[in-house]
Image (cartoon, rainbow, N blue to C red):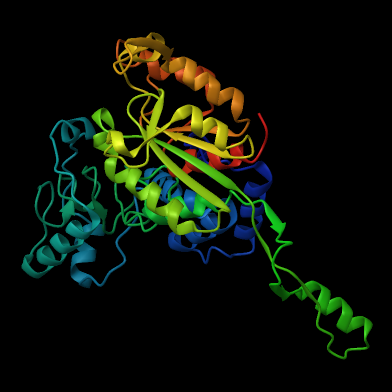
Length: 398
Protein backbone atom coordinates (compact mmCIF):
# COMPACT_ATOMS: atom_id res chain seq x y z
CA UNK A 1 0.00 0.00 0.00
CA UNK A 2 2.80 2.42 0.92
CA UNK A 3 5.42 1.12 -1.51
CA UNK A 4 5.62 4.48 -3.29
CA UNK A 5 6.25 6.17 0.07
CA UNK A 6 9.13 3.76 0.71
CA UNK A 7 10.69 4.52 -2.68
CA UNK A 8 10.25 8.27 -2.16
CA UNK A 9 12.06 8.10 1.18
CA UNK A 10 14.92 6.22 -0.45
CA UNK A 11 15.09 8.57 -3.42
CA UNK A 12 15.39 11.56 -1.07
CA UNK A 13 18.52 10.15 0.52
CA UNK A 14 17.13 8.40 3.61
CA UNK A 15 18.88 5.04 4.03
CA UNK A 16 15.98 2.77 4.91
CA UNK A 17 16.46 -0.98 4.57
CA UNK A 18 13.83 -3.48 3.53
CA UNK A 19 14.06 -5.11 6.97
CA UNK A 20 13.21 -1.80 8.65
CA UNK A 21 10.28 -1.35 6.29
CA UNK A 22 8.97 -4.84 7.13
CA UNK A 23 9.21 -3.99 10.84
CA UNK A 24 7.07 -0.93 10.12
CA UNK A 25 4.48 -3.07 8.33
CA UNK A 26 4.41 -5.48 11.28
CA UNK A 27 3.96 -2.59 13.70
CA UNK A 28 1.02 -1.33 11.64
CA UNK A 29 -0.58 -4.77 11.72
CA UNK A 30 -0.39 -4.60 15.50
CA UNK A 31 -2.17 -1.21 15.42
CA UNK A 32 0.74 0.79 16.79
CA UNK A 33 -0.07 3.64 14.40
CA UNK A 34 -3.36 4.14 16.34
CA UNK A 35 -5.33 4.32 13.07
CA UNK A 36 -4.36 7.96 12.52
CA UNK A 37 -2.00 9.77 10.20
CA UNK A 38 -0.28 11.46 13.13
CA UNK A 39 0.24 8.08 14.76
CA UNK A 40 1.61 6.71 11.48
CA UNK A 41 4.00 9.68 11.25
CA UNK A 42 5.43 9.05 14.72
CA UNK A 43 5.64 5.31 14.12
CA UNK A 44 7.51 5.79 10.82
CA UNK A 45 9.96 8.20 12.38
CA UNK A 46 10.61 5.84 15.30
CA UNK A 47 11.14 2.72 13.21
CA UNK A 48 12.78 4.07 10.06
CA UNK A 49 14.95 7.01 11.11
CA UNK A 50 18.19 6.14 12.89
CA UNK A 51 19.63 9.60 13.51
CA UNK A 52 18.09 12.84 14.72
CA UNK A 53 20.03 14.55 11.94
CA UNK A 54 17.58 12.94 9.47
CA UNK A 55 14.38 13.99 11.27
CA UNK A 56 13.99 17.21 9.30
CA UNK A 57 14.53 15.48 5.96
CA UNK A 58 12.01 12.82 6.95
CA UNK A 59 9.49 15.54 7.83
CA UNK A 60 9.90 17.12 4.42
CA UNK A 61 9.46 13.81 2.58
CA UNK A 62 6.43 12.92 4.72
CA UNK A 63 4.91 16.30 3.89
CA UNK A 64 5.67 15.80 0.21
CA UNK A 65 3.85 12.46 0.14
CA UNK A 66 0.97 13.08 2.55
CA UNK A 67 -0.16 16.54 1.53
CA UNK A 68 -3.88 15.81 1.74
CA UNK A 69 -4.15 15.90 5.51
CA UNK A 70 -7.60 16.80 6.84
CA UNK A 71 -8.14 19.57 9.34
CA UNK A 72 -9.15 18.11 12.72
CA UNK A 73 -10.05 21.25 14.64
CA UNK A 74 -13.43 22.28 16.00
CA UNK A 75 -15.86 23.16 13.18
CA UNK A 76 -19.59 23.92 13.13
CA UNK A 77 -21.63 20.88 12.11
CA UNK A 78 -23.51 22.93 9.51
CA UNK A 79 -20.23 23.91 7.85
CA UNK A 80 -19.10 20.30 7.67
CA UNK A 81 -22.41 19.37 6.02
CA UNK A 82 -21.83 22.05 3.37
CA UNK A 83 -18.37 20.77 2.66
CA UNK A 84 -19.31 17.09 2.53
CA UNK A 85 -22.41 17.67 0.37
CA UNK A 86 -21.88 20.68 -1.91
CA UNK A 87 -25.04 22.04 -3.53
CA UNK A 88 -23.65 22.03 -7.05
CA UNK A 89 -20.81 20.55 -9.03
CA UNK A 90 -18.86 23.24 -10.83
CA UNK A 91 -16.86 20.61 -12.76
CA UNK A 92 -13.85 22.85 -12.99
CA UNK A 93 -10.77 21.04 -14.18
CA UNK A 94 -7.57 20.96 -12.19
CA UNK A 95 -5.76 22.42 -15.21
CA UNK A 96 -7.93 25.53 -15.05
CA UNK A 97 -7.27 25.96 -11.35
CA UNK A 98 -3.54 25.31 -11.55
CA UNK A 99 -3.03 28.04 -14.14
CA UNK A 100 -3.39 30.70 -11.44
CA UNK A 101 -0.47 31.62 -9.15
CA UNK A 102 -0.69 31.42 -5.36
CA UNK A 103 1.16 32.95 -2.42
CA UNK A 104 3.34 30.62 -0.36
CA UNK A 105 1.81 30.75 3.13
CA UNK A 106 3.31 29.09 6.17
CA UNK A 107 1.27 26.69 8.29
CA UNK A 108 1.03 29.27 11.07
CA UNK A 109 -0.32 31.86 8.63
CA UNK A 110 -2.86 29.40 7.21
CA UNK A 111 -4.24 28.48 10.62
CA UNK A 112 -4.57 32.15 11.55
CA UNK A 113 -6.38 32.85 8.27
CA UNK A 114 -8.68 29.86 8.84
CA UNK A 115 -9.61 31.13 12.28
CA UNK A 116 -10.57 34.50 10.77
CA UNK A 117 -12.65 32.87 7.99
CA UNK A 118 -14.59 30.74 10.46
CA UNK A 119 -15.52 33.83 12.48
CA UNK A 120 -16.71 35.69 9.37
CA UNK A 121 -18.34 32.99 7.23
CA UNK A 122 -22.12 32.58 7.44
CA UNK A 123 -23.08 30.65 4.31
CA UNK A 124 -21.97 27.98 1.88
CA UNK A 125 -19.41 28.82 -0.83
CA UNK A 126 -18.31 26.78 -3.82
CA UNK A 127 -15.76 27.65 -6.48
CA UNK A 128 -14.35 30.74 -4.78
CA UNK A 129 -10.87 31.75 -3.72
CA UNK A 130 -11.47 33.18 -0.24
CA UNK A 131 -14.06 31.40 1.91
CA UNK A 132 -14.02 27.84 3.23
CA UNK A 133 -15.64 25.86 0.43
CA UNK A 134 -15.31 23.32 -2.35
CA UNK A 135 -14.02 23.16 -5.92
CA UNK A 136 -12.29 26.52 -5.82
CA UNK A 137 -8.93 28.10 -5.24
CA UNK A 138 -9.35 28.81 -1.54
CA UNK A 139 -6.73 27.24 0.75
CA UNK A 140 -9.58 25.94 2.96
CA UNK A 141 -12.03 23.22 2.00
CA UNK A 142 -11.85 20.34 -0.44
CA UNK A 143 -12.07 19.23 -4.07
CA UNK A 144 -10.30 22.35 -5.32
CA UNK A 145 -6.72 23.35 -5.84
CA UNK A 146 -4.31 25.28 -3.65
CA UNK A 147 -0.68 24.17 -3.34
CA UNK A 148 -0.49 24.87 0.41
CA UNK A 149 -4.07 24.35 1.53
CA UNK A 150 -5.80 22.70 4.48
CA UNK A 151 -8.38 20.11 3.46
CA UNK A 152 -11.57 20.26 5.53
CA UNK A 153 -14.14 17.54 4.97
CA UNK A 154 -14.56 15.71 1.68
CA UNK A 155 -11.97 13.33 0.33
CA UNK A 156 -8.34 13.82 -0.58
CA UNK A 157 -8.01 14.21 -4.35
CA UNK A 158 -4.83 16.21 -4.91
CA UNK A 159 -2.86 15.77 -1.68
CA UNK A 160 -2.06 19.48 -1.38
CA UNK A 161 -2.58 20.15 2.34
CA UNK A 162 0.33 20.57 4.80
CA UNK A 163 -0.88 19.91 8.30
CA UNK A 164 1.50 17.14 9.36
CA UNK A 165 5.26 17.56 9.54
CA UNK A 166 5.00 21.12 8.27
CA UNK A 167 6.60 22.98 11.17
CA UNK A 168 10.09 21.45 10.78
CA UNK A 169 10.93 21.19 14.48
CA UNK A 170 14.15 19.33 13.67
CA UNK A 171 15.72 21.82 11.26
CA UNK A 172 18.61 22.53 13.67
CA UNK A 173 19.57 18.85 13.92
CA UNK A 174 20.50 18.54 10.25
CA UNK A 175 24.17 17.91 9.50
CA UNK A 176 24.09 20.01 6.33
CA UNK A 177 22.78 23.10 8.10
CA UNK A 178 24.70 26.25 8.98
CA UNK A 179 27.22 25.34 11.64
CA UNK A 180 27.19 26.64 15.18
CA UNK A 181 29.61 26.28 18.09
CA UNK A 182 27.80 23.23 19.47
CA UNK A 183 28.14 21.33 16.19
CA UNK A 184 31.83 22.21 15.97
CA UNK A 185 32.41 20.97 19.51
CA UNK A 186 30.51 17.75 18.87
CA UNK A 187 32.72 17.09 15.84
CA UNK A 188 35.94 17.87 17.71
CA UNK A 189 35.01 15.25 20.30
CA UNK A 190 35.75 12.65 17.65
CA UNK A 191 39.43 13.60 17.92
CA UNK A 192 40.05 11.42 20.95
CA UNK A 193 43.07 9.26 21.58
CA UNK A 194 43.04 8.49 25.29
CA UNK A 195 46.22 7.62 27.19
CA UNK A 196 47.23 7.31 30.82
CA UNK A 197 49.15 10.24 32.21
CA UNK A 198 52.13 8.56 33.88
CA UNK A 199 53.67 11.74 35.33
CA UNK A 200 50.70 12.63 37.52
CA UNK A 201 49.36 11.31 40.79
CA UNK A 202 45.75 11.92 39.76
CA UNK A 203 43.53 8.86 40.05
CA UNK A 204 39.90 8.28 39.16
CA UNK A 205 37.41 5.62 40.20
CA UNK A 206 37.49 2.51 38.01
CA UNK A 207 33.76 1.75 37.92
CA UNK A 208 33.99 -1.55 36.01
CA UNK A 209 36.89 -2.75 38.17
CA UNK A 210 35.05 -1.76 41.35
CA UNK A 211 31.97 -3.77 40.31
CA UNK A 212 34.08 -6.85 39.53
CA UNK A 213 36.05 -6.63 42.77
CA UNK A 214 32.87 -6.09 44.80
CA UNK A 215 31.25 -9.16 43.23
CA UNK A 216 34.39 -11.22 43.88
CA UNK A 217 34.32 -9.96 47.47
CA UNK A 218 30.87 -11.46 48.12
CA UNK A 219 29.10 -8.13 47.74
CA UNK A 220 31.24 -6.16 50.15
CA UNK A 221 32.25 -2.89 48.51
CA UNK A 222 35.84 -2.83 47.31
CA UNK A 223 36.94 0.29 45.48
CA UNK A 224 39.42 0.17 42.64
CA UNK A 225 41.15 3.22 41.21
CA UNK A 226 43.07 3.79 38.00
CA UNK A 227 45.32 6.47 36.57
CA UNK A 228 43.56 9.37 34.92
CA UNK A 229 43.34 9.13 31.15
CA UNK A 230 43.39 12.24 29.00
CA UNK A 231 43.17 13.03 25.33
CA UNK A 232 46.63 12.77 23.79
CA UNK A 233 45.69 14.39 20.47
CA UNK A 234 47.77 17.37 19.35
CA UNK A 235 46.21 19.71 16.79
CA UNK A 236 47.79 22.22 14.42
CA UNK A 237 45.12 24.55 13.00
CA UNK A 238 46.05 26.64 9.93
CA UNK A 239 43.43 29.17 8.84
CA UNK A 240 43.14 31.34 5.72
CA UNK A 241 42.36 34.94 6.66
CA UNK A 242 41.41 38.01 4.64
CA UNK A 243 40.36 38.49 1.02
CA UNK A 244 37.65 36.08 -0.10
CA UNK A 245 37.67 34.51 3.38
CA UNK A 246 36.22 37.70 4.89
CA UNK A 247 32.78 36.36 3.93
CA UNK A 248 33.39 33.36 6.21
CA UNK A 249 35.00 35.27 9.07
CA UNK A 250 32.14 34.54 11.49
CA UNK A 251 32.12 30.86 10.61
CA UNK A 252 35.89 30.57 11.09
CA UNK A 253 35.58 32.43 14.38
CA UNK A 254 33.04 29.85 15.57
CA UNK A 255 35.39 27.04 14.58
CA UNK A 256 38.30 28.64 16.44
CA UNK A 257 36.20 29.25 19.57
CA UNK A 258 34.91 25.68 19.53
CA UNK A 259 38.45 24.30 19.20
CA UNK A 260 39.65 26.42 22.13
CA UNK A 261 36.59 25.66 24.29
CA UNK A 262 36.94 21.94 23.64
CA UNK A 263 40.05 22.16 25.91
CA UNK A 264 40.48 18.40 25.84
CA UNK A 265 43.30 18.34 23.29
CA UNK A 266 46.76 17.78 24.67
CA UNK A 267 47.92 20.68 22.51
CA UNK A 268 46.26 23.16 20.15
CA UNK A 269 48.27 25.63 18.06
CA UNK A 270 46.65 28.05 15.61
CA UNK A 271 48.34 29.98 12.79
CA UNK A 272 47.03 32.10 9.93
CA UNK A 273 47.95 32.63 6.29
CA UNK A 274 46.50 34.47 3.31
CA UNK A 275 45.36 32.42 0.27
CA UNK A 276 48.21 29.91 0.56
CA UNK A 277 50.95 28.94 2.98
CA UNK A 278 54.28 30.55 2.07
CA UNK A 279 57.55 31.14 3.94
CA UNK A 280 55.84 32.70 6.98
CA UNK A 281 52.63 32.13 8.93
CA UNK A 282 51.03 34.39 11.54
CA UNK A 283 49.80 34.10 15.10
CA UNK A 284 46.78 36.38 14.56
CA UNK A 285 44.30 36.82 11.70
CA UNK A 286 45.51 40.43 11.18
CA UNK A 287 48.82 38.94 9.92
CA UNK A 288 51.10 41.74 11.07
CA UNK A 289 54.82 41.20 10.31
CA UNK A 290 55.80 41.29 13.99
CA UNK A 291 53.33 38.44 14.64
CA UNK A 292 54.83 36.06 12.08
CA UNK A 293 56.92 32.92 12.45
CA UNK A 294 58.95 31.03 9.88
CA UNK A 295 57.11 28.17 8.21
CA UNK A 296 60.35 26.19 8.33
CA UNK A 297 60.41 26.70 12.10
CA UNK A 298 56.83 25.43 12.30
CA UNK A 299 57.68 22.28 10.31
CA UNK A 300 60.72 21.61 12.49
CA UNK A 301 59.00 22.14 15.85
CA UNK A 302 55.69 20.32 15.27
CA UNK A 303 56.42 16.69 14.49
CA UNK A 304 54.37 14.19 12.47
CA UNK A 305 52.23 13.23 15.48
CA UNK A 306 50.17 16.43 15.06
CA UNK A 307 46.75 16.36 13.41
CA UNK A 308 46.81 19.21 10.89
CA UNK A 309 43.63 21.03 9.83
CA UNK A 310 43.81 23.62 7.05
CA UNK A 311 40.77 25.89 6.75
CA UNK A 312 40.35 27.96 3.59
CA UNK A 313 38.39 28.39 0.38
CA UNK A 314 41.41 27.42 -1.80
CA UNK A 315 40.50 30.32 -4.14
CA UNK A 316 43.40 32.39 -5.45
CA UNK A 317 45.13 33.51 -8.59
CA UNK A 318 46.77 30.37 -10.05
CA UNK A 319 50.06 32.31 -10.06
CA UNK A 320 49.99 32.42 -6.25
CA UNK A 321 49.83 28.65 -6.04
CA UNK A 322 52.11 27.50 -8.85
CA UNK A 323 54.84 30.11 -9.32
CA UNK A 324 57.89 30.77 -7.14
CA UNK A 325 57.37 33.61 -4.68
CA UNK A 326 59.52 36.74 -4.68
CA UNK A 327 61.15 37.68 -1.37
CA UNK A 328 61.17 41.48 -1.08
CA UNK A 329 63.68 41.40 1.79
CA UNK A 330 66.61 39.87 -0.06
CA UNK A 331 65.32 40.08 -3.65
CA UNK A 332 65.35 36.32 -4.20
CA UNK A 333 62.74 33.81 -5.33
CA UNK A 334 61.56 31.13 -2.94
CA UNK A 335 59.34 28.03 -3.13
CA UNK A 336 55.86 28.31 -4.62
CA UNK A 337 52.73 27.88 -2.55
CA UNK A 338 52.30 24.37 -3.93
CA UNK A 339 55.89 23.54 -2.88
CA UNK A 340 55.12 24.55 0.71
CA UNK A 341 51.87 22.59 0.74
CA UNK A 342 53.65 19.47 -0.51
CA UNK A 343 56.14 19.82 2.36
CA UNK A 344 53.21 19.73 4.77
CA UNK A 345 51.76 16.68 3.03
CA UNK A 346 55.07 14.82 3.35
CA UNK A 347 55.53 15.90 6.96
CA UNK A 348 52.08 15.12 8.37
CA UNK A 349 50.29 11.80 7.71
CA UNK A 350 47.15 13.09 9.48
CA UNK A 351 46.07 16.15 7.53
CA UNK A 352 42.78 17.44 6.09
CA UNK A 353 41.46 20.61 4.40
CA UNK A 354 38.10 22.09 5.45
CA UNK A 355 36.56 24.31 2.77
CA UNK A 356 33.55 26.63 3.31
CA UNK A 357 33.02 26.62 -0.47
CA UNK A 358 31.62 23.45 -2.10
CA UNK A 359 33.72 21.88 -4.83
CA UNK A 360 33.00 23.75 -8.12
CA UNK A 361 31.17 21.75 -10.78
CA UNK A 362 33.37 23.19 -13.54
CA UNK A 363 36.75 24.85 -13.79
CA UNK A 364 37.14 28.57 -14.45
CA UNK A 365 39.89 31.07 -13.64
CA UNK A 366 39.05 31.42 -9.94
CA UNK A 367 38.01 27.82 -9.27
CA UNK A 368 40.94 25.95 -10.84
CA UNK A 369 43.09 26.20 -7.68
CA UNK A 370 40.22 24.80 -5.60
CA UNK A 371 39.88 21.82 -7.95
CA UNK A 372 43.64 21.28 -8.08
CA UNK A 373 44.07 21.28 -4.29
CA UNK A 374 41.07 18.98 -3.84
CA UNK A 375 42.98 16.37 -5.87
CA UNK A 376 45.95 16.26 -3.51
CA UNK A 377 44.32 16.95 -0.11
CA UNK A 378 41.57 15.14 1.75
CA UNK A 379 39.20 18.09 1.35
CA UNK A 380 35.82 18.27 3.12
CA UNK A 381 33.00 20.82 3.08
CA UNK A 382 32.80 23.01 6.15
CA UNK A 383 29.37 21.65 7.07
CA UNK A 384 28.51 19.58 10.11
CA UNK A 385 28.54 16.43 7.99
CA UNK A 386 31.83 17.33 6.29
CA UNK A 387 33.37 18.22 9.64
CA UNK A 388 32.47 14.81 11.09
CA UNK A 389 33.95 13.05 8.05
CA UNK A 390 37.12 15.11 8.35
CA UNK A 391 37.57 14.37 12.05
CA UNK A 392 37.19 10.64 11.39
CA UNK A 393 39.77 10.85 8.62
CA UNK A 394 42.26 12.53 10.95
CA UNK A 395 42.10 9.51 13.26
CA UNK A 396 43.40 7.11 10.60
CA UNK A 397 46.70 7.15 8.75
CA UNK A 398 46.92 8.18 5.12
